[in-house]
Structures are given as structure tokens and as C-alpha cells.
Length: 130
Image 1: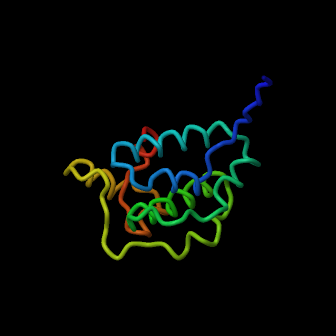
Image 2: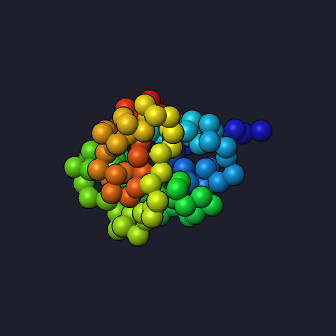
Image 3: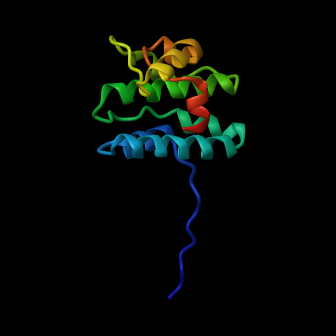
């Protein structure tokens, strides 16, 4: 029997969104960390395509907005504009994913602009270790 070669495909933000559906919070953060690690290793011309497709709803508005903020943040770090789909996503009520007093203060001071303007308060350091 001949084995089929499996070709590596980096995770897209739409794929990440699909994986977040039904996952608990610790698993969601591990998935975000894996996505960010893969994203960092891809060449810039590949990274742009990983953000283009709009993710379907995760079933949690906060995470849907998080994905939009993450997409805009990563595109900006690469010197590109974000895909148009991110503009429609924002929260009416602030969300602090890491909700301790110290984490809240850190997030208010250090949340990247793409997250702040959508009401998601997570510090840049938490994204680097997520």
C-alpha cells in the first residue's frame, strides 16, 4: 500500500476560529499560542493569506472580537492593513480575559491598539506568551 504524503498547511485565523468552537478557556489559549507560533515562522508573503478569510462565529462574541483584534494586530506588525471583515467586530462591554487586578492594570496600560479599540484588554506580553 502506497502512503500519501501529508502536506503541511499553516493554520489560518478562520481555522483557529473553528477550533475554538466548544473548547474550554485553557484550550482556547493553547490554540491561540499554537497559531501565533506557526504565524511567526511563516514568511511574510504567506502570513498575509493566513488572515484574509473571516472566521465563522465561535459561539462567544468575546472570542469573535478577539480574533478580529488579533488579525488587525498581526497585520499591523507586518506593515499591512487588516482585512475588511475585522471592522464589523467590537464589544459594547470591556472584556479582560485575564481578570486579576494586576492583569487588568497591565492590560489597560499595555493592550495593543487593535484590542483596546474593540474593548478587549489583553497585554501585548500575554499575546507573546499565549
